[in-house]
Image (cartoon, rainbow, N blue to C red):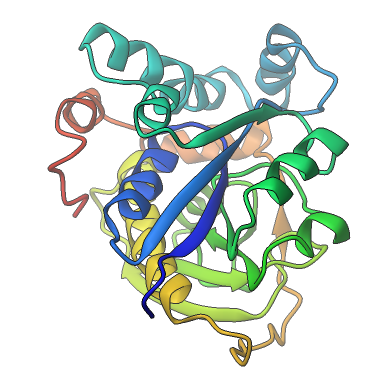
Length: 273
């Protein structure tokens, strides 16, 4: 392949999207031409305050605090350390950027279409692509999912893998369709779960594995690529409820400040292993 693959990343800015962004930017066979950033937290009509309060009601204060730590707090601490934000990194490289609550809106579709992508890659993204968006890229819409699909479908697979005391999980790169976590599988990478893993450390490793697999699949993908259909429906888990998060806290930890701050300080050099 002589011409780099034109890729648009669809994500919600976070610690985990930072990992995927790094791998895309450092792959010489890939040209990241745009990023579509979700500003939706729960419902697209919610304000940040209302969504935050609803998240606490849904999942409890500790889990909502973890979500804040990997998104808003992460951005704020990077600023304190004079490290460029997610958006600033893209601006410096003159990569097109759009924030939206709806990827299927007219504005979003026009943005995606104007960049003439070969691949749309979703990672840590909380919106469902409908038919018009799925048809936009020249080759395919792909997604990084932090579990071995069809196991642990849903919004936070690593949480449920730890909650249910799974010994193994992994990352999946699959073709997207009009259902969450449903399309044909292109590649899976397995990972043993350690007793020392926090939700944060496990997700760091899963998104690193997923990002590396996504780069491989983006480079290799062509019009004859056929994935492996998911033969089992699998269980879909929505947001954890307070009972889930209480049980989780009896077994595991969301994150440790040392590993969290260490990641922020050494983002570019960490191996996430």
